[in-house]
Length: 108
Image (cartoon, rainbow, N blue to C red; front, side, top):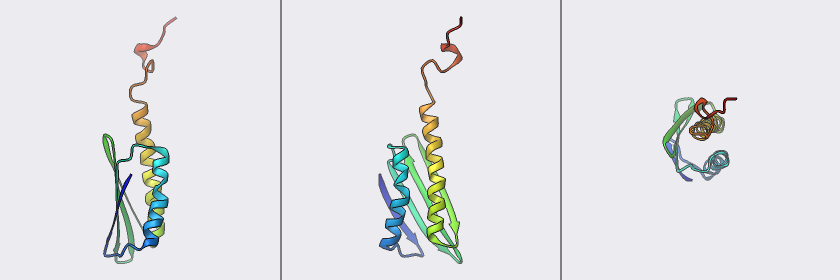
């Protein structure tokens, strides 16, 4: 997984970089086919924002979060992306199941 971390009106410290990597590492535990992850951390007045775009085969997943603290914004961003990855994984795995439709069921 390629991680691109940028800061907008914010300097990305090594502590922030490590925190983002540790929180978003669980995405690869659920879904191995993550190609690219772009995270932008920004500050707008009193709101700390975190945005991410996740590129997986066949789809791009986007999430954004805002909070008073950058660490809590990253936490909620990781939760949102985690739910989106699980939903995408279910859609991909359930797409063409053998004997899953009515056409392939055995009638007695």
